[in-house]
Length: 592
Image 1 (cartoon, rainbow, N blue to C red):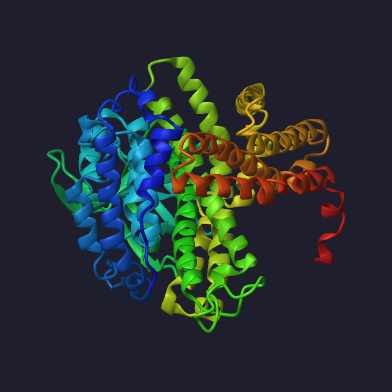
Image 2: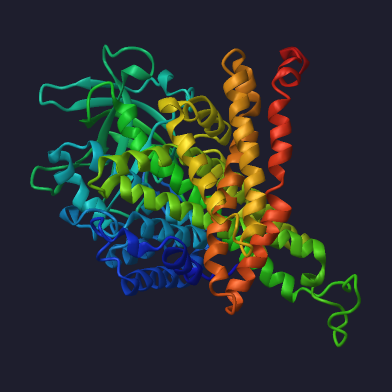
């Protein structure tokens, strides 16, 4: 049985020593996030994740969800009670404005709490996670009436939310969707169509499910310019807020999946269901992107979360599993063999995962703080800068953290040998569960194309230049500091590779777009490595001030490992990018 310990101390170190949460005290909600409050929130979230959710993870995987003949769905034993505890604790709305029943605390705290939940039980965490995404979209684009009608119950957690985009013939290309909306005399719409892969689409954990559905209004333009967004409740809500009749939306089936068995991923049938427009007609993607960006950051957190829990179990096993002797001679001569932690390749593997996890957590936190600035700052320039950062880093966090998170889960499984392949230790479940994060909310290849094709040149490259300049200025400022130079110098080399790659795309992708497509994934991964390297420099800077602390010494060693063994990959990525698209595109289709 897998175990989990929430990395609360590491999160507190990042918040206070690296990112200095107290410097954001001018933003609404941050004044309430005192060190004592922050620590209490994180420790309670960690306790809930460890004691309530972790024991349900394997059980939920084995039992899965059950669809009944009437279309209702039963979730695994214990899930309903666990969500009730979340509701009682007010966890779902900790960052939502108080006017809708939330606590107004920083979004950064929500992301950290969500990491703990996802590490403990990804299938369960998706139910409140999707609800938070739906809340975010309604907060920005919902009318006052829609907000008043739906948000308080969703924030409380007694109603949950979903996102309905995908149809069987269209995933990434939403311009092809066929679900239609017919306007009614009372201002509502009748929604008809079928959506697939709808996470948490039907279940028994809440009184109502509030679906956000993309559909095309009759007579709307073709393509993405004719898509609108609607709120479609499972059970209609009366004007006084009480529940009325069942709406025309049902679960047609539960998808048979590789992993996340405890989450009810549904085919949803809309048969003249009543829906209400969110935002403007034919501007649905603008509204949905609020939820999608929130979800993509959340999916990146899922990649980190599974990497973290897989690492913890692999490290524990490596210290306990006795096998062979150290290459340099017996380290535990009183035992029949040494634990496998003595072997360099085992340590290399574990350090790769650990070095990723600590920097990835910092990268999420850095970006989550920008999210808070974007939504809460009264300074238009600060908000624009934060928006630029999020737009640029969202595909990087989603793509890099899920890609490496899955790879790390596989490597952690490898530590167990054959024992990792069977269910007993839980490692094979981490691998299966981690795999989906690379696919949903925009497959990683699409994230790479979004970064290269849209984000680099957006607003004249303003976001990219701000990112490059921030890291470049940091390197210049710290270059004369001998203590941090071992970390700053490799970052400078990697930053140079990223600058060369960016320039190469500008010079070679316009005339030949396939060059951008062929190099996009390498560029995404390079961008991620540079961002993670910057995070390690910030972490090292804080750790150097406390070198007498054993934890800080460990961070500095891990940072050095990242700089020496992981960051140099940017050189190979640059070479692949500069090779262009010729070898990629030359083979005729029929030869595959």
